[in-house]
Image 1 (tube, rainbow, N blue to C red):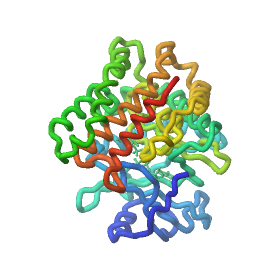
Image 2: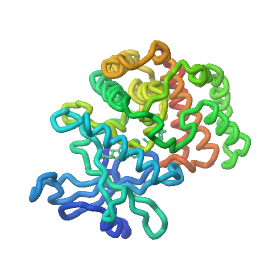
Image 3: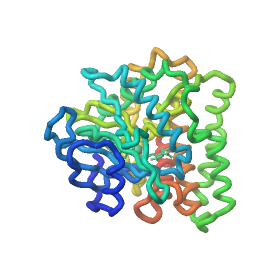
Image 4: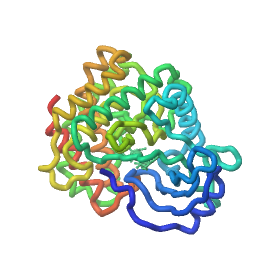
Length: 363
Ligand code: ADP
Ligand code: GN1
Ligand code: MG
């Protein structure tokens, strides 16, 4: 289970930022939260921010310093989220058992606040209990995760993809990611190339097979849909009975392929190890977890998917695992400039774990 309470600290600028949002109740505490690799996330605890007026329930908020190096189209990214959450809210209402992340407006009615240094901030209502997992504990939980991401695609299938801005072009393009890796190898900015000869070979060896998916997309066999595009397991929130109740981290929701969503969930929820597991013997693909994810996903989205999409589900797990492996490798070569890292060599460990997982995959 993800331990959200990383460490306690209140930077001086947080209080100032909070004043720009329409919060209720008194805000009592701020602490770093979650295990995302992109934004800097704070849990803001409050007394009396419960939904009913006068309630002294303490449910709090999630405040994020938004990473606008990764998402330079900040306003368009937030607008995509507004559109998607508005659409989902029509279907995931009270009593549905599902919770749509709710943005908190700024005092001027905007979706984000820009501080004096030019950093964007945004805020959500905290979803409780909001349990997330980095590694899947059992098959029923993998099934739940498959179901909610299948439901996500199905419930957004009547939102035309062209209404969303492509906020990161080529986000899951094998061609683009491979070119970026080759550039990182050529530049060797951090002078680490000689350390990673084996990983570079592995990436190259698998590149041809991976181009199958873009080829099939280019031939028009796979439809473009509104997809989440960052469906790792810890972007699902569970309740205390391990029911999947919400999908978070909506920044990358844009036109994409169902196979990206299925594949990234397979990468993170059919693996027996952590994304950065150092002991490669602890990493393995679990066929029973894969089957559970597939069953849950198809239970909700099966009626939508074309025969080509269904036939490519097994490849999608390898595809997304390869994509993430080469992205971690490129970031390692570039000197760890994209993903947040918590110790030296973490990106290399992440890359090795992805490649090990690929070697153990049999679907
Ligand atoms: P990143 O893009 O950095 O991964 P996320 O949006 O996924 O950022 O948020 C990081 C973590 O914060 C999540 O993994 C989750 O634990 C927590 N979190 C985010 N939004 C909420 C929310 N609305 N309610 C409860 N927890 C949340
Ligand atoms: C990032 O935001 P987070 O930590 O959920 C990344 C994903 C990767 C993931 C790997 C915008 O996701 O694409 O799959 O790390 N998000 C972005 O753990 O690059
Ligand atoms: Mg996340």
